[in-house]
Length: 301
Image 1 (spheres, rainbow, N blue to C red):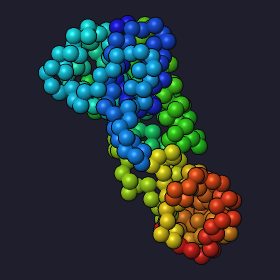
Image 2: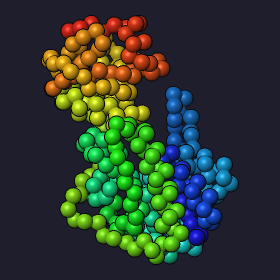
Image 3: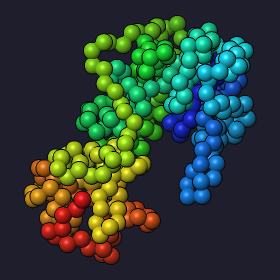
Image 4: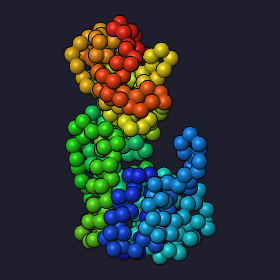
């Protein structure tokens, strides 16, 4: 097929690679413009732009697709379809309807559950047992379009990082399968029941809330790993917790109840396993405690 690809973060890269490997003609790659990154705030191209340039593909980075000239340029590509994966810009109706088969989106949830910006994080936070990836036919609403195909996977003890990477690969495989025989995957409307919205993660949510159950705190840690990271504060310093275990014990929520840094929650306790002090690399808990003991009885906030 004659395609445009529209995506920005690392999640989208496997789909771009799969389209090229399958022999499709990717004549243009749309991605968000370079953004300031890291401490030096140097303008850095998106993961998709970097990969597209490695593949020798033509890259466009419009700030918006609302202007008539941008829409005309898109329509002039004469596409069979546009493939979208975490692009990050709203697609106007003129763009959605320009390709022969419209715009097909790789979405990392089991729609209509978790429409919106942060479906992986929200699924983990909610304690969902399964999630998945769908090829959705895009329409003007927020992730409301009919679904052509679905692949499911268990969440288990996965972090946002590991689950996102898994869904990216599953989504790439699913999209290639759909495009190989698109008429064999008719559009199925989403059910009206079970709609939930995956709001963008707010930084305030990443502070560990020991007033919740230990199970919920452990989900919070996995949901915000690798970024932005769940954290608590001690001695005026932030400690990011990258993994933890639910353990027996009780006390005032936030109280350190033993020398192994078990922290009381609403019920039972949580014990960090991999932790990171500000400005330092992540380390196992035992390494942290050798250099920075946190006394029993301390109330962490």
